[in-house]
Length: 279
Image 1: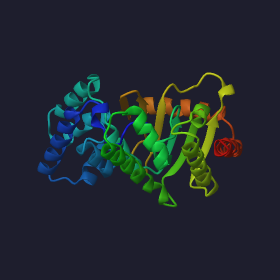
Image 2 (image 1 turned 30 degrees about the horizontal axis):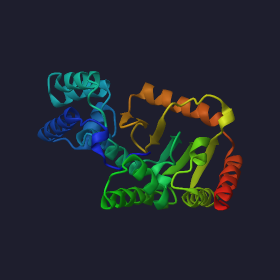
Image 3 (image 1 turned 60 degrees about the horizontal axis):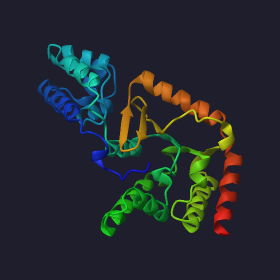
Image 4 (image 1 turned 135 degrees about the vertical axis):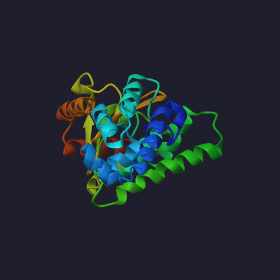
C-alpha cells in the first residue's frame, strides 16, 4: 500500500458511523448489558459489538434490525444503518485497516504496483513516500517510514497472522529507489519466505489481463466475519458486506490459480534480486 499509515485525508471521515457506535454503547450500557450479552442476543460476538461501538466495523442491516427490540430503540439503529449504508460519503480510513491487521488471524494481499507495506524495507518505503510526496520535509518522510516499519511487528508472532502476498510481476520489475534498494527489498521478501514467515506468489505478465484491478487486502478473524480493503489513488474502501467480501475472495482465488507456484515465485524473486545486485 502506497499511502502513509493513518493518513485520514485519503478517506472521508465517517462521523455517522462514529455516532452510531457511541449511541450503541450508550444504549447498551443503559440497558445494563455487556458487549458479550448484547452479542448473544443479536447473534454475533461481543468483540464484534465492540468494533461497532468503536466505529471500526459497520454492522450489517440485519444485525442493526435485531439491536432495536433488544435495546428498546424503536427502529433507531435500523434507520441509522440504512441511511449510512446508502450514503457513499462515509468511507473507512486506512488507520482502521492497520488496526484490524493487528487483530487478523490471516491476511491475504494483492499488490499491483508496490510491495505491500508490511513487507517493505526502510529504503524501499522511503522511495515510495518520496515518490508520492516529493516536497515533504525530511522529518515527515522519516516519520512515515518509521510508522510503516513499526506495523511489520505483527509478523514476528510465529502463529498469526498468516500472511499470503500475491505480487504482480510489475512490483518486482519496477525499480523503486534504485537497484540497491530493490536488491535489498527482494532479498528481504525471499528471506521471509524461506523462514516460512509468509506465503508468496507472483502473478506473471504472461498470465494475461489481471483479474484484480487494484490493491486488495483480505482479512480473516477468529470470532468476527472477514473484511476486504480495496485501494486506489488517494482512496480506500473497507468492505464488510458478506456478499462483497465473498466476491473479493473469489477474485483473489482466481488470481492465485493463474499465478506462479510458491516455489517458482521464490525462484523468480531470487533471480531478479540477483540481477539488481549486479547493477
